[in-house]
Image 1 (cartoon, rainbow, N blue to C red):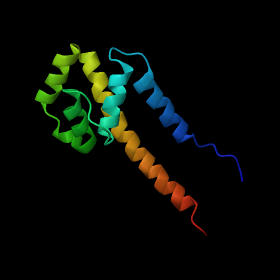
Image 2 (tube, rainbow, N blue to C red):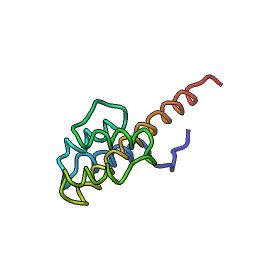
Image 3 (cartoon, rainbow, N blue to C red):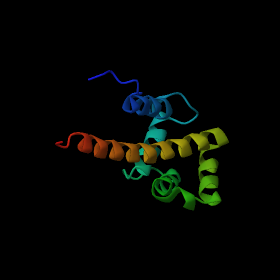
Length: 112
């Protein structure tokens, strides 16, 4: 088999996950990780992050200004609020990425 010039998407996704959820930021990594997990269907996070993260995971287009304002009030800064929203979006996106990769792996392993 010839070596592939394609990037290792799993490694890139893991690097992104580590950077956003474990890297430095205004918010604690545990809060970003909880928001990401919640958006991916995981356990409830603390209020007011829970509802926003859950909604980002289910139907991001339904997020309201009031939900974002509640998180902004809790974090005290737009940058911290952005980190929570980005973490939730990443959690939802990685869930879908992992599901797609699983399907692709299953197709690749199918008999010819």
